[in-house]
Image 1 (tube, helix red, strand yellow):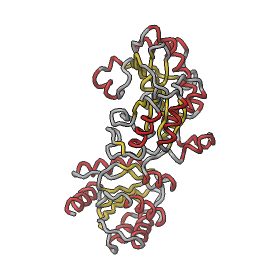
Image 2 (spheres, rainbow, N blue to C red):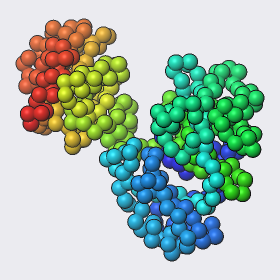
Image 3 (cartoon, rainbow, N blue to C red):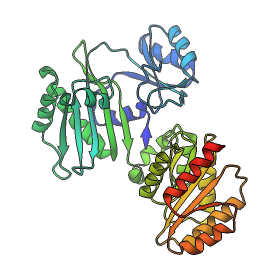
Image 4 (cartoon, rainbow, N blue to C red):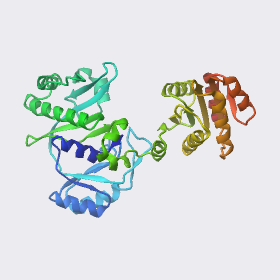
Length: 385
């Protein structure tokens, strides 16, 4: 679950991570002006959206008076903020108001899972304030890593060493190492799946502060955290993704025009690859789950079709425990009760696939015997539309 910057900072504050002073979030220009007054008349107004690169897109601005803050908020609240991470744009519905700080140096701190070592790992870099991916491409030596033992954790010495390896200023190393410890406590305590502090700001007056924060929480652990219930409603900016997750459907909107419905994450990704190989652009990742009953298929079709970019749909189901004839009945029943105006190609493989194919042959659906054939058919139909 993604949470906003202000929510991430609420979590981090509980674990002692030093932060800029703030007066909270606001949803109207008058509220923004009042909150800037609380900070002494000057404030940083920060759009609260799930995307990096907000500053370059006009989502972070400094106000030197409450009146200026109200003017800035008039333009920022309600705007569609387009960033490199969200080129489709995200509507700004609330802003965070913080004290202005004079930044002398910017660093990067993070914790992410490393599937190669099957451990969480600290990432530290002296090149903060920019995408860590860009740093890795330009200067891999500017990034230091520290794997975290799942049982033993890390020692204070190791935290200081990774800061030294990352070439942080000697005067900052002890403070940065202490913040890494606090981040790790927050990551474990809140069942995090990612933390990024970018930048970790060193100010002119010697403070070391988490000027920005990105925090993701493991969905599977939310039952342990009733305190995050209020965050769940705001965890997704994309309305279609939010609707899918209400039905416990794994769905990610990708922006293409070929809708994809499969069972199993691996098969879904392989189907996306085949659509790309055939010259198409997947509109989504959707894993229907282990079964494909009519109601479930109908819900998935409704979610995929709610994306106005979708010009065709590919359903690719592998029947293991799930029988293909039952899947075919479910797909036919679902489509008969819906007004679908785009082409729909179905490929079934596995248990009772012959019986399933016979059911599809009696419907208006377009059958395919292989994944490659199905991808080629739907791409050709979409491109001809």
